[in-house]
Image (cartoon, rainbow, N blue to C red; front, side):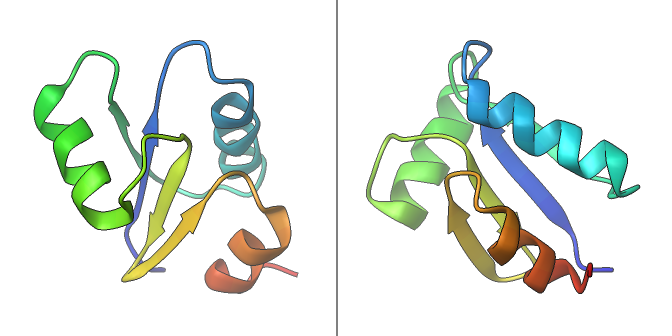
Length: 78
């Protein structure tokens, strides 16, 4: 399974939905809180040119927002 990283903020509803989806599908992930981690925020903006969360990296693929179909496809979950 590819490495999964999610850039989040504590108040983001879609971030919570994405993390719940990962838990339901036994996907291990690294969470970076961009509200508290300046370096992670800069990294996210550099990769996506925007401030919106969640930003989900699956391997080299970047998915902005909680798009369950794209996430499932990237993780080969049916």
